Length: 371
Ligand code: ATP
Image (cartoon, rainbow, N blue to C red; front, side, top):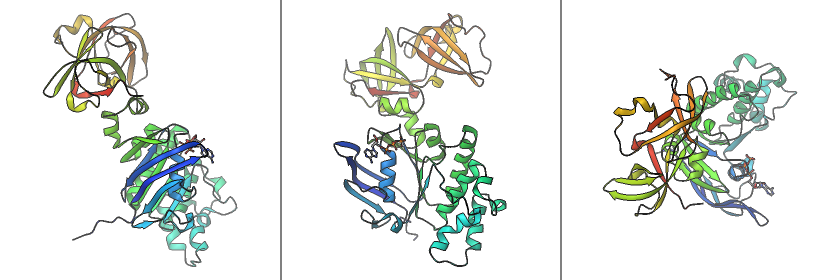
């Protein structure tokens, strides 16, 4: 029987970091399994870089421990950990060519015959043709790939990436996201990626930890976090969400019925993280692209009842693939709706009366009394 490879597991147990009286990272327990592409996602100052630096050994934790595979590395200096880091500033050696930049880690370990390994690594990052160029002769994206090759040449168990694409323009950043994902799949080691960009985290990572004020607020796959956020912070950090203030009316079986601004909403009980006793306050979340928007004149076929609300278009912006509408409704002020521009209804202009409706399976319920 094959035993599971755990050599690239990263385990943080109660790890924290305080600076004087300020807590940058509250005690954190986290396991990143071998071979996963894991993202630490959060706004500036939430503690993600500090967490990464504690894994690298560049920052000493105030409490707790770090294990890599079966080894407790809490007290090991960075160079003794089977980990390497790629930073936003690529920190390539300007006077060395690309080959020598990548070979650097091997030469420092006294390895003489480096040609085969360096060439393989340059192939992996698709820079085989550029080996004899100097860093300044490469584009930003190419330089970033050299930095990745240089970090991978010593075969670390874990690669840490600290906003590695932050210096690139949007188009190049998107290309590099796919490129990094391909490289990770090919080498099969654990990647831990720090970013403040939700799209970047969702494109690349199989698991995302959303951090807020020094804590992991929610952990899950990108789809899970998007479809089932547990807090308003996560709902708003990953995309846009309408959050309707509602009150629990009745609960029967798997269905919760709520009152909101004269309308009735239905929510599957399994999709509600708030208490569901009658009178309880719940924020019902619905993503703008999950809503059907119909001109009021054509809405006769939409059954009266739950998740059917009326409103008036307050604003619309055409953005190519879709049109974004803002709807004034008694149920929710400034309701946002994104509608695909296939067969767009020319009557859907500001001032038009509309009906919004949606499938309750696409909603989620949050505790309205949380912070
Ligand atoms: P960014 O995306 O801006 O790098 P981040 O989420 O990575 O943000 P950290 O760099 O981990 O955040 O910092 C978390 C908090 O700890 C911030 O409020 C920061 O000001 C504080 N901090 C970080 N390093 C120190 C330090 N050496 N001394 C005091 N405070 C620090």
